[in-house]
Length: 210
Image (cartoon, rainbow, N blue to C red; front, side, top):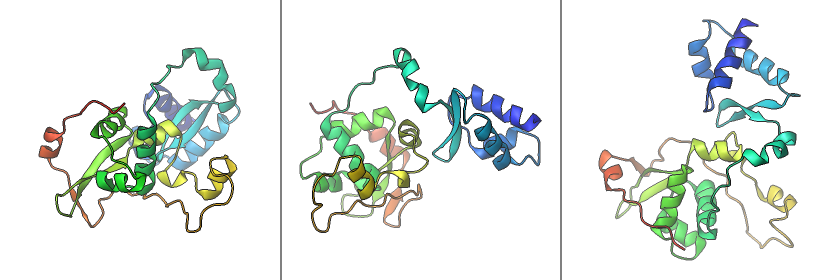
C-alpha cells in the first residue's frame, strides 16, 4: 500500500507521463512496479480519473464519460489546415519520411511552413538525414503526438478495417489499396544518418501555407 500511495502521488503531481523506470528510481528498491501500476489502474478504473498508458508511460486522465463536464475549461486549439493534416498522417504512417516522399504521396508540393507548424505543435520532429543525394531530412512523430491522440504506440493507429468502421472508407476499396504499418522504432534506419548540431542551427521556420 505504501508503494501504491507513493506511485499515486508521483503520477498525480507530474504534468507529463511517467515511465516505469522513473517510478522505480523514486520508490523503494525491489518494488514490483508493474503490479503497483496494475493495482492503481484497477483502483481508478471506476473513478473520475483513470490511469492510462500512453507512449509506454503512465498518466492520470479524465474518465472519457466525464469529458463533457470539463468542456468549459478546455482551450480551443487552432485547427490545422488540410495540408497539415494530410502531411501529419503521411508522417505518422510512413515515418521515417522525407519532404520529397511526402510530396510524392500527396501528389502536390509541400510548403516548408506546413512542416514548421507541425514541428511547433511538437507532434513531429527531425529524425535524421537520408543517405541519398542531397541528404534530405527525415521526419517522424513524437511522444507528444502519442499523448495528444491517446496512443500507446504509433502501431495503434487505425488500419483499413478501423477506417471502414469509422466511415472514412466507403464503398469498394481500390485493388492494391493498403494502409502501411507504422514504424514504431525511434532507432535510426540503416539509410539514415544522425542529426548534428548544425542541422538545428540551420533550421529556420517559415510562415505556414494558407
